[in-house]
Image (cartoon, rainbow, N blue to C red; front, side, top):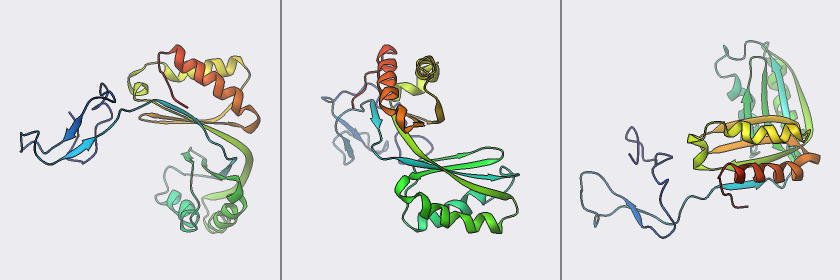
Amino acid sequence: VLAEGGAKVLHPQALKFKTSRMKAKIIHFKNGNLAAEGTEIIGAFRSKLTLFKEKLTMITILGTEIFNTPGLLKKIITPVSDNDISLYGVSIGTKHIGIYVMENYAQQSYDLIHPTVIKNERLKSVTLKNNIALIIARSRDFIETPGIIERITRPLAENNINIIEMTTIKTDILIFFEWKDREFAYKIINKSLKEAGIKVTN
C-alpha cells in the first residue's frame, strides 16, 4: 500500500526497501501502465541524527483543565506564529503547555503569550527556561523497532544525562537536553542507534 485513505501522501513504510539505485514512480491505479504520467521518486530514505545548532528556550504555561478547553493551544500559539517565530516543539499535559522557540526570540514570545495568560482564567502563569539543546533522530526503522526509546534513554541515564523532554511521531524522535550536555548526548545516541542496527548520517 503506497497511500492511505485517498490522501496524496505516501505511507511511511511504502519505500522501506527502496535503494538509491532503484527507480520508482507513483501513478494512479486506474492507469495500470508504468509509462503513464506520475511522480518520480529519486534517492532513498536515510536515517539521520541531527544536533540542532541554536540554543532553544522552553516556554511553559501553567493552567487548569487544559485538556477540556477547546482552542486553548491555538490562542497561545497564534500570536507567536503571526510574528513569524518558528516553533521547534509543542507539548501538552494536564496542567502545562510547553513550546520551544529559538532563544533569540524567547522574550518576544513571552511578551506575546503573556496577555493571553492574563485574559484566560484557565491559565495561571508563563515561565522561561533557557539553554535548551535539541537532538533529532529520524529513521523509518523507529516505527517497527520495539524498545527503541529504551535503547536511547538507558545509556543517557547511565551517564547522568537528564532528558528535559522527549516527543515522538512516526519516523522522528525529538529529545531536549540541557545545552551543556548536547555533545556528549549526541555521541551516546549515535552509538546506541548503531548498536540497534540503525545506521545514521550526520
